[in-house]
Length: 92
Ligand code: SF4
Ligand code: SF4
Image (cartoon, rainbow, N blue to C red; front, top):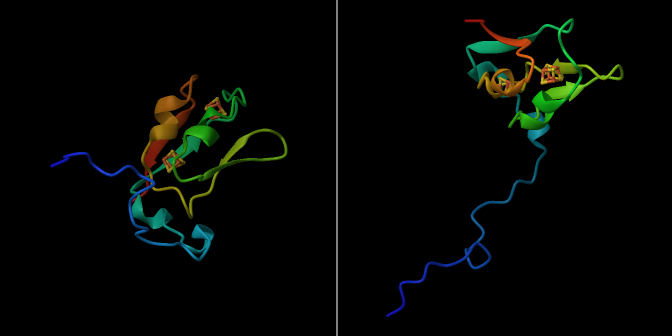
């Protein structure tokens, strides 16, 4: 008897998301929010790419902006910022 586990393409579909996740504002989950010191920010945009929630956008001037309605306060952006200009601040 084979003990091979099925690959991802063989698994049945578990769920289908039919709405945009933009409708689900999950930002009130977190107790901390990132505060960015724009004077030190080098506009590298790594925080934008590392945020698992897509909660950091980049404005027309090239600076990151945290969308608090979607930020869950995980702190990954602060951890990954190469110049450490993001501080997690307790909000609750
Ligand atoms: S704290 Fe987490 S969810 Fe919030 S902006 Fe940073 S990486 Fe994204
Ligand atoms: S990772 Fe840090 S330096 Fe880079 S854009 Fe974000 S806040 Fe600015």
